[in-house]
Length: 120
Image (cartoon, rainbow, N blue to C red; front, top):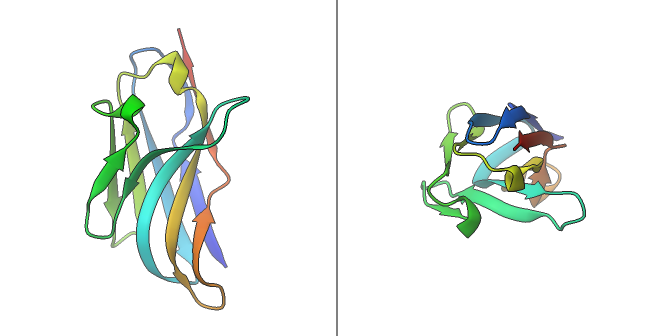
């Protein structure tokens, strides 16, 4: 099995910062892309940021210049530094990994999510 455990969510005032972490463990042997998605109430899940194994990144237009994604390959961990948070950033944030694991092969793997609430 592959486990993704997110941490770092919480309540913050507008303009504040949070740092999300996602630790990947279990039977995953190869990790390719790692990313963060979010889902606000009544809305579809959307990509926030993504980073490849080579370090290339892409961001949703709404977070460019405010959020930074990074990864520690030795620790199988991906981070999302969120600055200048806005109330519209309020959502459940999900960690996503695309990789290869024993038995299940190549697949997308998801964490259970961590809630970020930004108050105005």
